[in-house]
Length: 389
Image (tube, rainbow, N blue to C red; front, top):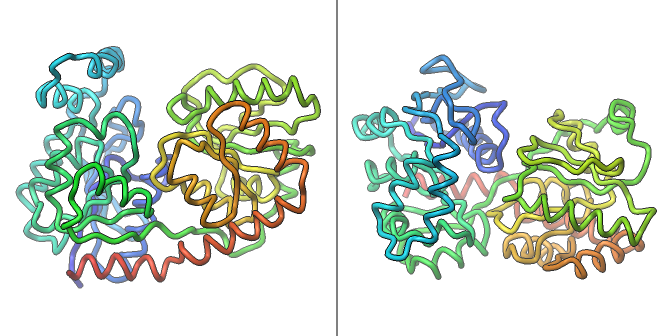
């Protein structure tokens, strides 16, 4: 059985993040065909990158996970200063950008050295996400056998000059969506590199979801719209709160807004904004199944597993129209609407909430779209083709 490695900035059952979850799902599917090892750090928290896991090697769902210490935690005072200042430097050069990368992390020189010294034992090495230290410094050590899953989207960092060579190095690139492929090719002019749009399959429980248990546990007895993910300004949550509170003044009978996920910003103290924190997968799916709408306010998404899961449960979505990937899901699946300002947010919310038939048709279209384009058998086949190339 051929041996492959997957490099990711953090990894674990308790790690909460879209790219990290996608990585774990893909690794577990590929482990049926290959001897898969994960190369990652000992960090669990993307804000600090502090070492959390004790063991250098462990097994998670029968996959070997090699963990390497981070050399220093992120000093957020320093990082925030660098992060804010990097875009104001008049004659910014690659050295300024490298200082930003070092401050952002997770810096693990042992991990990079391991790839440098041991890449020969792997048939291929898959690098997840272009943005982090682990991919930026790790991929050049094994470019001739590297497969990059960039999870790229139109954000300020991707235009840093230091990333230009990175997107020309791997043997193959796997994109999650057609929009991501078009954006990367337009930005880096690297169409000549072997590439495929594979996406990530949607894993949902085969057993019946216990909706009543969710309602009883969280005392949910009224209509609600749902947000699932990291509660962060970079995810558009602050704008979502502002829009929702404004909407509630106009529509006093507006459904409640339920939030699932870790909060890194203050949540408004309002009786109709209800944060549930972390919940189990079954509880998350129960919430998706009974929500009127799932809202995704982020401008920067390369796939959004949350949106796909919601569509599988026939709950339509309202998304940020400035994110081409999310707009693509809505358009191809006839599965939701999108907004670019408050007036459009209000209009779309009213149209969806006040038209049960429309919501039903969007939900049905969304499920058909997910089943057609995000089936694991098709996706794994595309990965195998890349690995065997």
